[in-house]
Image 1: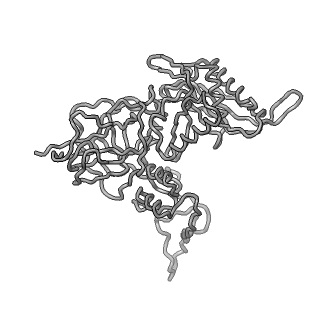
Image 2: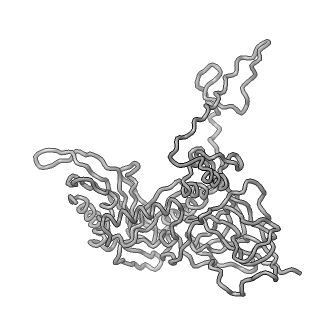
Image 3: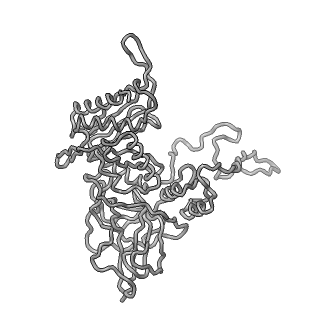
Length: 476
C-alpha cells in the first residue's frame, strides 16, 4: 500500500487562524517534488508561497482560489514517491503551527520576514472545491489566534472577489496590479462574472495595455432602458423586462421600487485577508481596553514656512512620551503589569482598499524630520505592494491616526492592546480665537488622545496631551 501524507496548513509565521487560497501551482494527479511551490496563500499581511513538504503525487487539494482555509486544516494530500527526494523526519520546514503573534498580540512578532511573492498568484477561473480532508489525528493546539482560542476545524470557506470601483478582483490581484504599475480599471477580466484574475494583470503588464496614469479609453455609453409603451392593438412594444429596474413609472413620475415591508438586501461576502484580521483585532481591543478620550486643539499660528505635518506630529508625540512615559507603554490586563519603553516606536495607521495596516516607525525619537519622512514613505510603499515584513506590523509602543488628511475633527481612536494610547489628528481649520485686545484667525489642528484608563491616570493623559500641544505650537 502506497504511503500517504496529509499536509495541514501551517501557521505562516503571523499567528493568524486562517489564510485564503490565491493560486494552486499543481492540480490533482500532478507529481510535485520536495520544496517546489505548492500553493500561494494570502494572509492579512502578505501573499506567501507555501512549498511542498514531500515529493509525490497530489491526491487532494483543499478548495479553490478564493477559499479560506483554517490554520491546521487539511491543505493537500500526497502519495509519497520513495524514488524522489524526501525531507528527513523532524527536519524544519520553516513553517510552524503556533507561536506567532499578530497585530494586537501581547508580544512583538518574531523577527522573521514574510515577503509577498514577486509573482503573486493567479485566481482559478473554474473548478469546484476539492473534497475536504479528514481531521488530523488527535487534538490540535491553539494556533495563536488574535482573539481567544481557535476552534480546531477543517472548514474551508468559499469567498468571492470583492468589487471596488466597479472592478471585481481579489486583494492579492489588486496588490500585484499596483506592483506591476497596471491600472486594474482598464484590464479586461476573464474570470467568473468578469473578475480580473492574476493572469489578466500579468498579461496587461506584459502587453503594456493598461499602464497607470494613461488616459482611460472612451467607453460607449450604456444604453438607456426604454420605458414600455402602453400595450394596445397592433402595438409592437412589449412590457418592460422583469429584470429592468427604474426609479420612474411609465408616466415618468418617481415611484417606490419595493414595498415598504421589503428590506434592502445584498450578497453576503466573508471578510478576508486584512479586513478579516482588522475585524478580529478591533473586537479584541473592544473587549480588553477601558478607553477614555481627551480632545483639544493645537494652535499652529506660529509656524513659519512650509512644515511637514506628519513629521511634526511624530516629533510632538516623542516629546510627550519623554515627558510622560506612562502613555508610551504596554499594559497586560491579565497580570496587571505595565511596561514603560525607553524608545518610541510609533504605529502609523495606513488606509488601503484592502483594509487597515499599522506599520511601525521604529526609534522615531532619534529621527530628524528627513528621517521620519523617509521612514514613512518606505513603510507606505511596502504596504502598497504587500512586501511589508510581518515583524514591522506589530510591536509598536504608541500609535498615530492622521485621519484629518481625509475629513473629521475629533475622534475616539481605538487603542489596540498591549499599547496604552493612540493619538488622532483631525482636519486643519482656520478658527477665530480670542487674544488680548481682540480676536485673530489662527490655523489649528484638532488632537484626540485615547488611552487605556487602567494603565494611566487622567492627569497623566492630560499632561501628555499638553506636551503635544506645546510642541506643535513652536515655530519650528
